[in-house]
Amino acid sequence: MFQNMNGLADESLKLKTQMTVIDLNPEILHPYANSDSFNVSNVPTSTAIDLMGIRPRVWEPYPASRQLCFNPVKLRVARNSNNPFPVSSMPFDESFVAKRGILFLKPMKVGGSTASGINLRIAKNMAERLGRDYPLCDNNFDHAMGFMMSGRKRSESFLWTLLRDPTKRAISGFYHFDVSRYGVEPSLENFKAALSDQTDFYLRLHYFGRFPSQGNKKQKVKSANDIMKKYDFMAITERFDESMVILQMLLKAHNVTLGDLLYVKAKSNNGYDDGGHKGKCTFIRQAELTPEMKRFVSTKEWRKQIQWDNAFYAAANRSLDMTIDLLGRETVEKKVELYRWAQSLVKDRCAGEARLPCSNSGVKRQPNETNCLFSDSGCAYECLDAFVADELMQASDSESTTP
Image 1 (cartoon, helix red, strand yellow):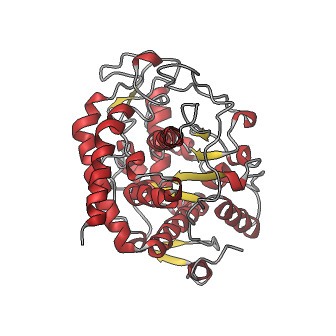
Image 2 (cartoon, helix red, strand yellow; image 1 turned 135 degrees about the vertical axis):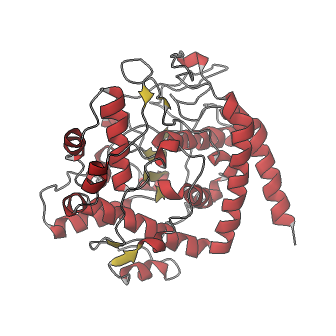
């Protein structure tokens, strides 16, 4: 059972299984987040989403009494260096995944590199504020799977993830990996083949054990609700501003500020990737769906294939709304406005300072030639820390003292 928090958790058990799209506040979009998060247009969206028995929940603030900053014993950072960043990639292995601290489970093609950079900046700034002798608190920022988190210490960790509309995520993956990196022709046949393995993607990725892919509805409902209980927060790509404001409020007891959640976007379409494929920079083509592709993603066949991911995504959206109601919708709206103002400063002052792994002309930079915390995540962090975050802090202080 979920913990009751001012009665709101009980409300989730009474929700109807049908939600209209307008309930999900789709108009609140973030203009500067990883731009490939929002470039898929004209994709038909169902007017009603069945929660399939998945229960939304209130995301609860992380208590001040619990420690959240630990020595990153397995993280590959340069100790005793004037510049320990960027950190190195970790092996995709359970033994290397952090079990304490701020843990971000990064799905593919959700704007995860941007969120990864935010997670790293939180960990770095928290260590600095606490006067630790290590450059950042232990954290997970790279791709992982839920089963790798099964040994995490619940009382010493904050586990979160990022979800994107399942259809848009699948389309983005096809154009990023198949078309751009591997040169696959963007035909309907290849499109359908690439999307054929997307069934239950979110559930398989986030589940802590072996997900019953061939299980019946009862088993899948149980697995999905188990995921909802074990995660501390689920951000939404299409509601990135709100999500980051809520993340800050959940971690406020550990002196996490809105300034810690500022970022320069990691990737953009019709630009280059992070140079992670064969050590070369790849030009990422913008997703351009043919009429046949658009018809396919509106068919009953496709909707049935992703029905559980749609339900999970909808439940996470409703959970975000419930948490906003708990924390105070007016308070959240004011913080979102402030956050957007700060991001406009980022665009003007820091975006041009970012030295990503791949230049605008597709030239691969060496790690020590970038100014990122990891790969293309957390880039231009010095600019964010030195200028924009300070101004945001001053604006926040001014707002809090205004009658």
